[in-house]
Length: 168
Image 1 (spheres, rainbow, N blue to C red):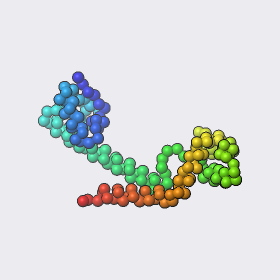
Image 2 (cartoon, helix red, strand yellow):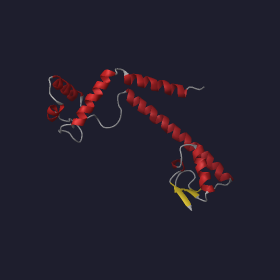
Image 3 (spheres, rainbow, N blue to C red):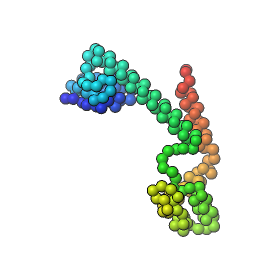
Image 4 (cartoon, rainbow, N blue to C red):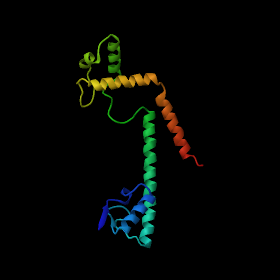
């Protein structure tokens, strides 16, 4: 029986896992076939095939770790610039201030909601949902209760990254 995979690096996360899986498949009578990559074709578990498999498994692990580090650095840089990915918020700062002001005057969120209009995106010109308004209010209250929490988290993350990169 043949176990087909598109590329070797799709089998596992690191060289040890890839090698263990290849050995497991061979021990259970399965032949490993790779459709793409440096070892395209049927995997030969004999001497030279095993040696090449181990080498390319280590290369795949190195590539995966490099991609992971680059992704984490990019996410950290974006977060430091205030970009957190995803869609833009439905409730803008102006809308939030309007809700806060009108609630302070005794109006309910249900009364305020029809007067708010989403400025951009697919729902442009429509009113935001009540849950979006309540979520924005909760985030506002959390930010007021824990000022500086985001900056502290970024600093802690940067310190961990630096510690992981420094040689021991």
